[in-house]
Structure formats: C-alpha cells, structure tokens
Length: 115
Length: 222
Image (cartoon, rainbow over all chains, first blue to last red; front, side, top):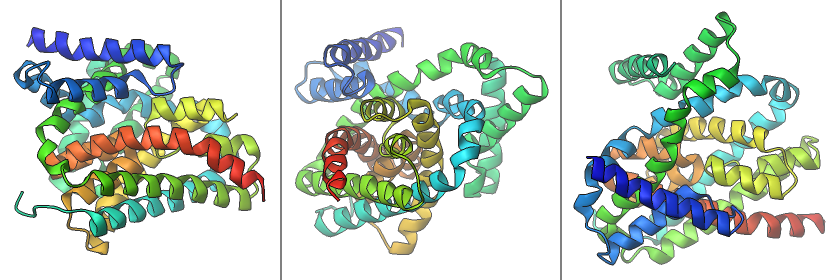
C-alpha cells in the first residue's frame, strides 16, 4: 500500500510542478491525472502499482469535498447580497449543461450497450 | 476535528443509503451539521479548515487517481473521441453563455459575472479562471461547490426523464456539470460512468479556460 501512496503522490507532485511552470493555467491534480493515464497507456507504469489506492481514493471523493463545502459559512455575507442572481443563473445554466452534454453524446456516440 | 469530520460523514452516508433521498446527499447533510456545530461552539472556519486540512489535501490525489480509473475503462472511449470532445465543447459554451446572459439580465455587475462564468468547472481550475477574468475567486469557490451539489442531485433525475441510457453520456454530463461531486455520484452508477465523468472534469476545465476569454470578448461586442 505504501508504494501505491508513493506512485500516486509522485504523479501529483509532477502535475503540481508542471502546473506551476504554466502559471497555474490547469491545476496540478488534473495534469497529474492526465500524466498517470498516459503513463498507464504507454506501459511506463503497471496498473497494479496504483490500483488499490486509486479505488479507495475515488470511491470516497465526495468526502474529500467536505472542508471546501463547509467554506460556504465564510461567504454568507457576499451570498446574502447576490443570492437570487447566483441561484437562478447557476441552476438554470447547470440544467442546460446537463441537457446539452447528455443529448450530444447520446446522439453522436457509439456504444456497446452490453459493455 | 478529523474525528468529527469522518464521524459526521459516515453517519450522513448511512442516512443516505437507508433513505435513498437525493436531497439527503451525505455532502449536503454533513456540511449542514458541521456548519451548525461550528456556529454553536463559535469555532471560526479558518481553524476548522486547518484541522481538516488533510481531508482537503486528499482531493488532489483523488483527482490524480481518476487517471487509473479512466485507464481501466479505455476501451469504452475508443470510437467516442469526437463525440466526447463535441459534447464537452457544446456543454462548456452553453454553460458560460447561459450563466452570463441570465446574470446580466438580472443586473449583475462585471465582477460577479466573471466570478460565475466557470461555475461548472472543478474548484481549483474555476478559481484560476475567475481570477484571470477579473472575478472574485472565493465567490467562485462557493458557487462551484453549490453547483456541484445541485448538479449531482438533479443530474440523474433529469437524465432519467430525458431517457438518456448511454453510460458515456451519463458520466460526461455529470462530470461536465458537477465536476468532482458529479463524479462521486457517477462512480456509484458504475465504473464506466465514473471514469468518463473524471475525464469530463479535466476536459471541461481546459475547454472553459479557453472559451471564457473568447466568449467574454464576443459578448462585449453587443
């Protein structure tokens, strides 16, 4: 397990360094994800080296958002002033995004339904 | 503090699994309980954040770990590269334009609009985009989390109503609209949905970062 921690953190650190070099245009975690994916595809690293920790981390992603979500409490002032604009624009727009993405993919995509 | 966070979340997760009510999403209930707890005992958010710092840190590695989940599902992506890129492009554009237009019509100023533009993107990317566009990153962070909770609750329901049966479409829409929170729901639907959703977070982030300056420029012409 400890070696799995090492490999996941290694890609995270590389991602952070690359992110720093490109002025934070894309965050380190996302770069790390793309690098890990690429490394696995090109067999630079074996999937068994990260499988267990990756499963454990991704299964509990919701939990890792908790501290950020509690941050809502420190923004009550700003939110109380603009809450209606924020609420309506964000909810309507979110619904539109879901509809747009799901429809385009459903119409255009090829999929093995038995997959 | 770490004990409190883990304990409260586990309890809320149990509650969610027993009831299966979307509004009782563990993140929603756990957030409410913890804010209530901090208010009652008069603990400032900053000291809570310090105590729960480790949990917050794990968000980064868990995004990295999505790379493995995605690799496991690579065979489902083949033949869908064009459709995935097109969906994300359309979704990103619809998201930016609609939130800008509605906020503008309701009288929001330039700073607020800039803070809202990247609302569908994962927090770290969204805050970066907002800052570059002249918004307030802390507003963005809060809106992003709220949108994530909303999207991951309404998403599965909405797509059932629309008759979406494609696993890739479900995963993409959840990741594109509700970033990591959508992914946490998509993973519960299945491995394909989860992996595609993780891919959608990254693509949506990059696409939105590229589109926000372009859309802002075009809209300023009117």
